[in-house]
Length: 424
Image (cartoon, rainbow, N blue to C red; front, side, top):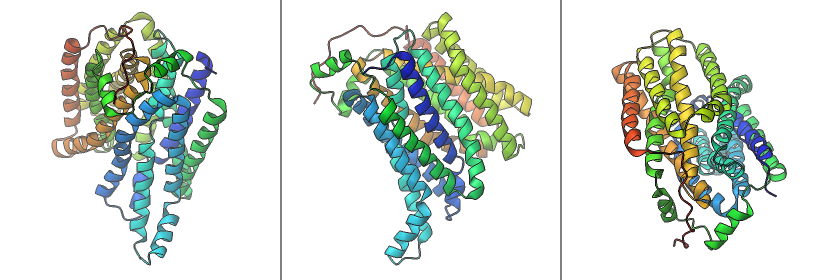
C-alpha cells in the first residue's frame, strides 16, 4: 500500500522527531561520558568524529539500498542500528568490566572506551535514516510540494534536537548511562512504529523502473553515473561549502559564547533553545511561504547572501543582543538553503537514484563534520574570536560566485529519459 501524502508526512515527521530526541539525549553528554573513563580531549574528539566517519561510509550505501529494496526496510535497518548503538553506549561500563575480567586485565577503562567507539561506529554505519526519510518524502510528494515536505522534516529535526538535550540534562543527574538507555528505548519505539505503522512509499511505477533495469546497481560506479547528471555536481559543491561554513559555526558556538561573551553553560543552553524555536518556525512555516512566491534559484541566492551577512555579523558580535540578531540571517539562511538544495537534488536525478544521491549528500555532510571542528578550533584558538566568522563568510562569498556561474534553473527537473541498463 502506498501512503497518502498526509499520512506519509505525519509518519516520517514522528520517526525523525523521535530519532532526533534520542540523538539530542546523548550528544551533549558524550564528552563527559568518555572523560569519566580517563579519555583525553583528543580521544573525545575522535569519539565524536567516529559517528561521522561511519556515516560517511554507510549513508550512500543505505540510500542506494533504499532505491532497490524500498524505504521502509532500510529505515528499519537504520533505526535498528541506532537502537543497538545506544544500547551498547548505555551498557559500555558493564561490558567493559566483563571483557576485562574475561581477559584477566585491569584495563577496564580501555575496554569501556573501546565499546563507546564501537557503539558510535555502529550507529554511524547505519545512519541512513535522514536521507532515506527524505527519499520517502520525495516518493509521496510531487515536485511542487516536495520542498515544503522536506521543510517539515527539517522542523522535526530541529524540534527533536531542541527537546533531546533538555531531557538528557535532567536524566544525567542519575548518571550518563540513563540518557543512553532512554535514547535506546526511543529508537526501539521507532522500530515498532516503522514495522507496524509505516507503509512502503515506492509506487508500482517506480518499482517497474527498477524491474526494467533488472536490478538497481549497488556499486559506487552506479552512484558516479547519477552524480554526472546535469546540475548535480554544482548542487553538491554548493551544499558542501555552505555546510562546511555552517558546521564550523556550530562546532565552536559554545566555546565562542564562553570566550567572547563570557556566557555560562546554562545561558548558552537558553540561546540554543531560542535557535531551536526559530529553526522549527523557519522550516515548518517559513519555507512554505517562500516557495509560494519564489523560484528555487532565487531562494538559493538570497539564502547565501543572508548567510554571508550573518557570518560577518558573527565575526564582530561583542554582546548577546548582537549575537541573537546575527543568528537570524545566519541560521535561517542555512536551514532554508539546506532544504532547497536537498529538494533540487531529488529533482535532478531519476526516480530510482533519489535515495542513493541523498546518501551521497549525507556523506558530504559527514565530511564537513569531520573537518569543521578541527578548523574551527584552530581558528578560534590561534587567531581570535573573529576569525571563524571571517573564514566562513569568505567560504560563502566564494560559493555565491560559483552559484551564479554553476547553477541555472535548479528548480527544473531533468528531462525524462529511459532507464539505463544495469551498471556492473
